[in-house]
Length: 65
Image (cartoon, rainbow, N blue to C red; front, side, top):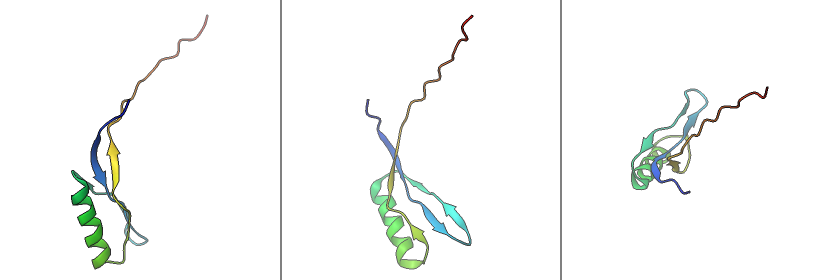
């Protein structure tokens, strides 16, 4: 089963301020942000990373008796 992309995240890091991960609705918005931050600062910036919808299934284990 393939889950859809729900957004894009860009990781931004600096030793003094730590890490931040703003999320965007489209790849274009995320790329524009990442490129703008790279040009204007010395922060470490990732490429946009897709955020995928996931499904979590919880199962209980019954002990044998």
